[in-house]
Length: 411
Image (cartoon, rainbow, N blue to C red):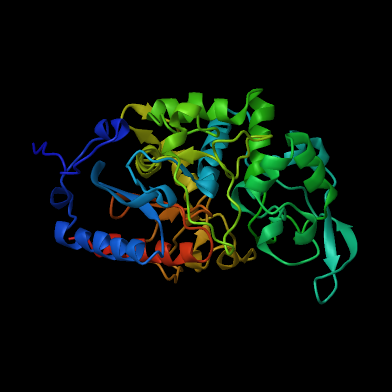
C-alpha cells in the first residue's frame, strides 16, 4: 500500500491527523494544480485579494493544502494553513446536521411546525405589497405554519433584510451576523415574528433567517447553547479543534483580516462575543477543520471512527427538497448557484442544473458571504474547502475561478 504523503511543506496539527496522499496518487495532476498558485499569486500581487487557503481531499485523503498571500496584509502577516476565518453561512450546514441528529433521536420531525418549539411563530402573517413592492398594503394569515423543513430549505418566508429592497426587507436585520451581534435571542424572535413574511411558507426559496430560527429550536430542545451542542456532537467527534463561535484570545492572532470593501457585507469579528449564537452564520473555522465536516458528509455521515449522522439521513439531507411549484430564487442570493436546487441546509446539483460552475450530479455545497466556500462531489469522491476574506461581488468571481481550477486538475 502506498503511504506516501503529499509534500505540503507545512502541516497544521489538524492536517497531520488527516489521511494523506500525493495528488497524483488520487487522480490530481500536480502540474495542473500549479495553475492555482500562478493565478492567485498574480491576483494578490495586483491587490485584487489579500490571500487564502485551499484544501482538497480525494478518495478520502488530503491531497492538496496550500496557502496564498496574507492573513493580515496591512501588517505583512503571511497566510498560514491554520488561519481562522469567519465562515458565515457555511455555518448553516452544521446547524442542519445538528437538527438532523435530533430528528434521528425522535426529538423533532421534519414537518413539525416551528411553533411547537417557539410559540410566537404560530400565527404568522404574509405581506400584501403594492406593485412597486415599496409599500405593505395589508397582511393575510399564512396558509400554513412554517415547518422545520422550511427552515432548512429556505422556504419559510423569513428573508434577510440585506438581500432585497422590498418594504418587508427594510423592516428586518441585514443578516444573521448583524442580528446576533445586536440582539438577544428573544429580541430576535420578537423582531422576526413582528414583521410579515414576504412569501407564503413553502411557496419560494428565498434566502433568510430560517437556520437562525432552527438554531434556537435546537437550543430549546436540548436546553444547551448552540455552540456547546456543536462542540459535543459534531466538532469533538470529528476533531474540529479550531471551530467555534468565539475565537479564544490565545488564537486571536490567527484570525484572517480582509481588505476593507464598501461593496461587501459587514462581517462579524469572531474574536468578539455574540448576543446569541446564530445557526445561520458566525462560526469561525480553518480549512482543514471544515474539510473534516465536508468529508463526513461525503462519506455519508462518518469520518474516521466518528459517525455524526446515519447514511440514510445524509442521503435525505442532500436530496432535492424543492418541488416544481416552489419558486427558486437561489440565483438572487448567489449567482454562482444559479440552476442549483436545494436539499436541507445545502444546495444540490440535479440532472436539471445548468450552472456557471463545473461539477457532477449530486454535488452539494453552500458558501459564506465573506468569500469562503466548500463543496463535496460524490461522483468524483472529492471534497474542497476554500477560505478567503473577499466579501462583496468579488467572492462570486473566486468561487467560479477556484471551481474551474480544481476540476481542471482532475487527471
